[in-house]
Length: 418
Ligand code: ASP
Image 1 (tube, helix red, strand yellow):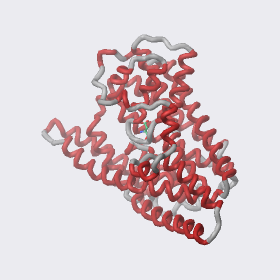
Image 2 (cartoon, helix red, strand yellow):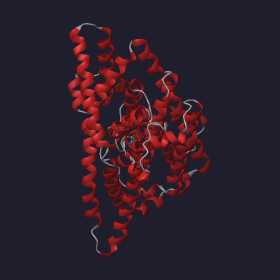
Image 3 (cartoon, helix red, strand yellow):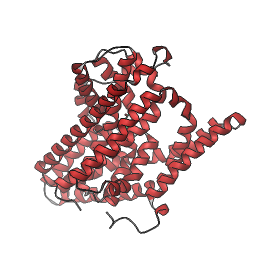
Image 4 (spheres, protein in one colour):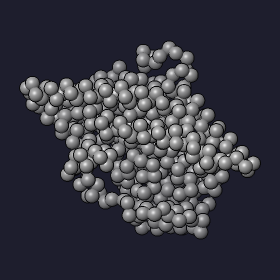
């Protein structure tokens, strides 16, 4: 680790600047809200500042598909053959399932211990956002959608899973064939990846500004008093996320990946902070890949495979949140859920987290699946929605942190650890 950590003072390194940006963004948001009663146009100010953050977000989104495609093709090609790809794939999926299940178990334990739903009343609901109950998809549909019928269309829509599947197949056939034409394609892919990575690096340098602006707007928009109303529920999800992020995952890093958790966290902090301020695993992907390869010494063959897949299907934070939210809603309606029902919550929360896209509020949309599975009223979502944005930011950070821990674990088993 220390080999790549630069010797510059902390405030000139990206993670230091990101830390400052988080504090400054929060302070600016709080300041604007405090001045609001004195005639300061806090909301307009927040939205104005937020545009800078939106530009950063768009720049990130701009590179996602070309970055996933080129790095996955080159990553698969560097793994060599279908057997290695299969082995890495299997380990990755095992890691994802294991950590997501652990996260859900933490959530279920806390929600049973503290029963945050007792403090909520059904009448306090706000309206459901439009289209909330129609956007979830069934498991067969989800599997079908993984196979693109038109790769250009999938890319244009930013549909990550079909692009991943196509890139893996492309990479596999690239190494299977020989000859000057195929080699030329391979070189073009490597060259395109170099260019895209350089571009990504430049965008990543803007992360402190983007994070600052996005967070300031978010604080102005949601305000701390909203959180107070749902404090017990908020604290249960937050506490669960904290346990998973600060205890479970570091233990996995230490015991399985054999990495110093603190050093590793510092190396990937810009990615985790970006996840926090964008609430989108997908938008964070360019930063995750950059931090993993440049700062955390994860080989490209691993990062280009584990991270895009993780950003799309590995969502520990989302799964934990689904489980806590479902049980909170059950408690609010006075419905007791026994062990079999809670096992069903565990299973559906796992599937819902796999099915949730790496975009803001995706987890809230997937709540419908979990609630319907155990026969709870979907309207319950309306009550917890008030604090969803902040929880979304927190769970997305945990999602991305878990993806990055996964990259370290797979690196260890691929025998290429630093
Ligand atoms: N926003 C989350 C993510 O991108 C998904 C969710 O809403 O839980 O990882």
